[in-house]
Image 1 (cartoon, rainbow, N blue to C red):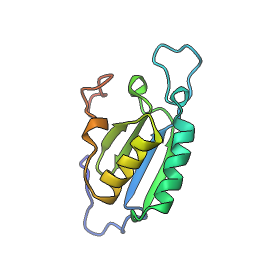
Image 2: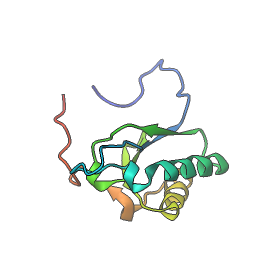
Image 3: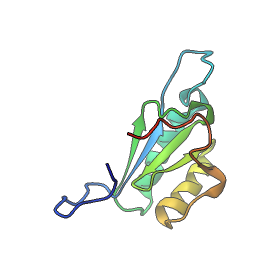
Image 4: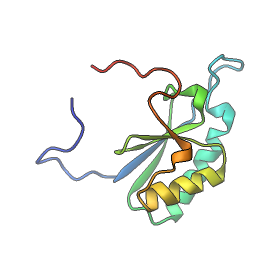
Length: 123
């Protein structure tokens, strides 16, 4: 399957989706979890700030496990498919301004496929 839109597709309801992992694992789990790294209050902050910013039609969603627990907390922005790790509200402010408002990237917070566990095979 290829990404992208086909002729005749309806216009998207949102221009971008930001999925923020808020998964919670059992205490002491070897992979850790985003929730123990404060992803829930940081997601609430991000959602409020995106609502205040002029970023177009952007939806901030809480997500279950995105399978990059060791790197968390993590979020991914679609349709671009750009992954970020973050720790603070200031990191999120930078992602909002640089990525969502200006269309750039926050290189210091970006994750590549080589970071963390290997991605599942295609297909």
